[in-house]
Image (cartoon, rainbow, N blue to C red; front, top):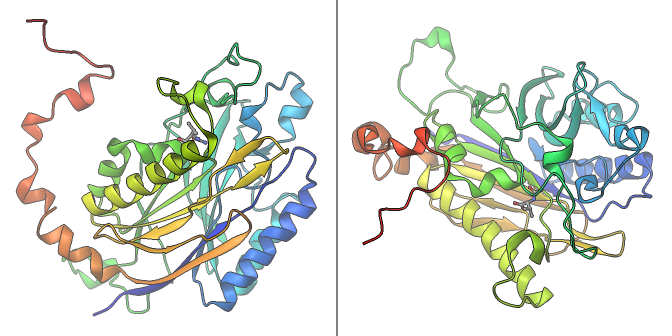
Length: 344
Ligand code: CDV
């Protein structure tokens, strides 16, 4: 039995420091309506989608910094965000979206939520685990900074997969007593930008039978101070590499965990200086790109997928239960840094 789903990535072009929230919101609404015309049931928006990618800036004013954050309990309800969730409900489209989250006790997280249109509520939350970059700006005044370690705590919610209701008619429910895998409501997991480069998170989701991984991102097209400068970098070549690495990890990890992935970029030149890659795409459990962005602007990337396509990998090559050897993987959870073999 096919388990088909129409899904989309809402890639967003640049959002500048001076961009006004209502302007950005109306762009999001336009993307959502375009996706709706295509029949999308689920739309993914980028990381920190409501604002510019502020962690590249050293912001000393608490008031300015706070203006980029949403309060933890307020996201579907605040004036800054409500119109998007209201429209999602009206159109009957689930959305997943990233934003900077401020908790009641003042902590900051780089967060993503999943909003179910039929339920009219947030049904899952993820906080970015792998925060890239530095706490202090680079000494080079021209460097592109990535000050996520300054503004955010590392995510503390783990990689928790969740089922999304009301997307697949006839999906098996608990009462049916069905034990067979791959029959219920879709299993999804969220990650945010840099997380996609870490196999560990993907495997945590893979071990929960994930069928779709959602990942919003803001990835610099040229950031030698961040990536290293062993070889001199030409901006155009560096950007090609950044897109290549993005697709490599989405395709490779989708294959190794037998799942689809949807990734949505914030793309283009922010504040005339900071270039972000595009490359939003939808990948299949066999590692193929099914659909991808053609621009670095606001663009909907759409595909109709069949979750049944996950079964082949999950039951053959990557049948974890039969083939994994956990007794041999010890270092993965007891060690963070590298321990080389002794010198000869
Ligand atoms: N927002 C990000 O997490 N960006 C990172 C950096 C290092 C470019 C990324 O991995 O894409």
